[in-house]
Length: 76
Image (cartoon, rainbow, N blue to C red; front, side):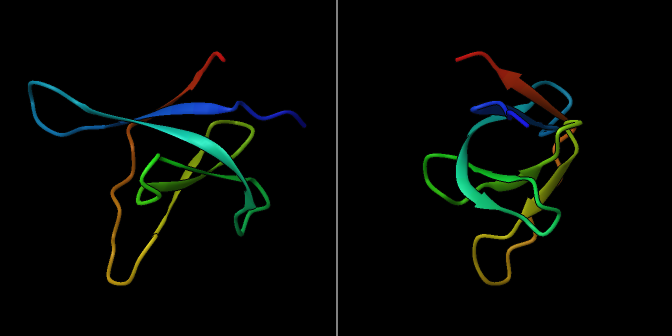
């Protein structure tokens, strides 16, 4: 299966504007066997399935990452 190289994760931040984070595929896989994606800082991590389902992955202790409202694949 071929997975997109990058996704935009859209988080609802306020009534006016959403937060958008671009994540890139890594060589790691998550508990579900799907690729782990992370942002350039390595703080935002997500396992994204072949159907676009997102499971956020904590990158440090005591982190409780929110779930994005949308994951959009980006063209290379």
